[in-house]
Amino acid sequence: MADITSATSANAGLSFMGQYSGITTDVVDQLIEAESGGKILLQNKVTTYNKQKAAWSSVSSTLSNLQTKLQTLQNNDSYYTKTTKSSAEDYATISGSANSKSGGEFALEIEQLAKQTKLTGSQLTSVKSNKTALDLTGKLTFAYSGTVTDDSPATVDIEISAGDSLVDIADKINKQSSTVGVSATVIDRRLVLTNNAAGQHSSTLDQSANGDTLAALGLTGDAALGQAAKFTLDGIEMERDSNTVTDGIEGATLTLKKVTDAANSVSLSLVNDSSTTVKAVQDFVDQYNSTMSIIKGYLDVGDPTSSSSDSTTTNTQGDLVGDSTLQRLQSSLRSLVTQSDKTNTNSTLGAYQLGLSVDKDGVLSLDSAKLQEQLDESPEKVHDFFYVQVDEFDDTQDKGYTTQLNSLLNTFITDTDDHKSVINNTTTSLDKMVKSLNDQIDDFTERLAAKREQYITQFTALDTMMMNAQSQLDYMQSQLGTNSSSNN
Image (cartoon, rainbow, N blue to C red; front, side, top):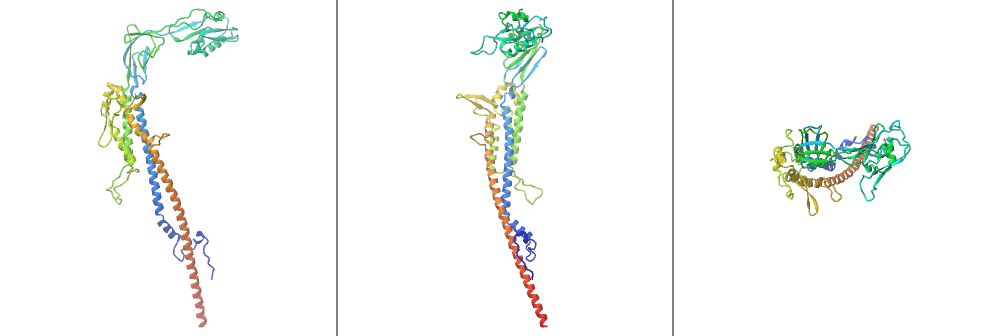
């Protein structure tokens, strides 16, 4: 009789397990699968929590987009961006910043343009070119024209050495241009000094100092004095020391280019571009509806009346169905979107007056005609409805329609050193639960692996016993057969 030994490991016993008992590895796998119900439940929970985390990430993203649209409505550019027009752009143009609330139609007549004072030296015939060394030493003294401080000097000296050419001297002056108040150029072996500021200002060059140096450079003549710009704006005569006039119309810049004919004037227009405001409000409305649609999808309860066996219907629920936090956000957004800020005493307008309304399905819409009517009457009032800063008790406070909504969104998506957002706290909690579940799954997996090893060891031992019993039976039968034959 062959000597049969039991397997020393599960794998060693796989070669004959089940040959006698009929319990194969497939049967063991079925037993393990039957005991894996708890693990599957844990895995399903992990899947659910991960879906919820992804859903909250999507909600955070759409709330961030909505906040961006609110911030656009808090920007002056959305209300005071200007459109400009000039009847003769080669004579004059007008521009305006969004910080300006002024505008209108203006008639402009230009009598003369501003010019800068210039001092032109005589031609130095003794040098071959602008870059020839002058063999001149000395200095040019200018009155100080820079920013005045307690330590400001009265004059500034430009030192000239023997190797300097006209170009070198001009470079030295230009390096000190902000303090000497002039710029220098070289034209046909002449040094030309031009005052930085236009208008009838004398040259800052001190004619009484360093006479020899001035004579050598031909700078002893009189300067050609500049002049102020003279113009008439809507019948008001004005003079300015620049052709770029920033203080004629509040918040606007006039650029004077050519003297107009005596009988003609330039018509200038500076008005608010209301289409920018309408677009900003419409973009907000569209993003709000997109946000609410996403939230509604995640809270969707599906169709409770549908049957799981009915292939023609589905009962797909949102990943955050029944979530009280998301329901609170949805309710708060619905409540605030048509409410005015009651603490905003700077605004007398309401959301409905600006064309904002919500239908029975909760969809926000904009009546652009109503909004345009309010913009035509007063863009300032529209601006102050959406956003305004007011001083209260020596403190600047943000007020307005966008401030209310922005405050709500900050609660959900903005983290600070002292406060974590609702979504941050929620996703952190989900991460902790997923980690705990994965730890439990790992423990469950280890227990199932150990259980499988136990089953294989037990059933391998059973097969070994049955195999030994069969061998003993065969041996006894063979012995009985031998005895029977010898008796005969």
